[in-house]
Image (tube, rainbow, N blue to C red):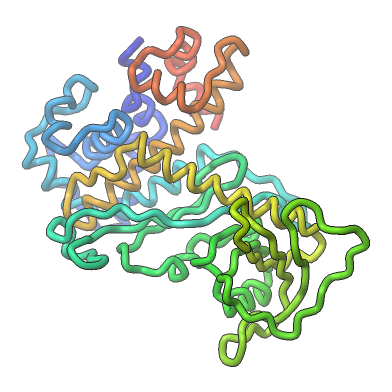
Length: 372
């Protein structure tokens, strides 16, 4: 039972080796490995993220126990350096398409939230000289969008740590959702672009406290504001060259410490309290980043090249998507007395001490995958 419920066994059901071939052909990559192939690397990185191995050398000692092909440290390191990380990025998108619930929408206004932000993984400059940040530090960024409430990973892209978040935002947009973001994404000219798009991008984005409101007009309201709301108005944002072409709605509230929170949006039919509640959902992406860093070994970078670093990070995110899917499907399948939290599922699965009903469910993984 233990072997049949290992992560690598389930990965092989979800992503059989033949799925890699057309992608590798598109990337013009020829796998010349015999003892250790690209597919072996994929399974290694998956188990390394799941079991939080410390690096290539540590993984070499644990591979056989996880049912993986044994190989020496040098071969493993060279393979990770050689395989283009675009392969793992595409496989992540395949996994997201397989495991995330399909959004069924009618024509109309989107209601679900797409929460975007980035997280930086930093190391010493000597390890990643191609990705300097400041001083003696280097690092890379993962820019992610998750579906609010469901905590499903929707889109991801990567940059070096110096890259501004705004430059990656275009890769995360999806007009089927309301974009929710912090001040790093609050550029007025982008708001005009969102408004001008044929498939308008609705958004709730925090502004800097020194933002200029040009020609402000307070919105009429019969009842006093509730909660921490202080103002609700429409205006153009910025001044001179930075002045927005369109008028946008601005909702101003106070955070628990009494500091102002200024939100810009093009959702004119929501109450100001509704706009504030949408922005409060932004904390979910902080929870997401904290979880993957604590549970998927993301801060511990094994290699030093772009392929090795980004390949490891994309495989860790792929494991997150798969675990989230297995957890949600399992909780909907097992008896209510056997239901688990996501944290407990991850911990018990890693230790191979899941309750019997869960082990039976995972042993039937082939049927789970065919129902995706």
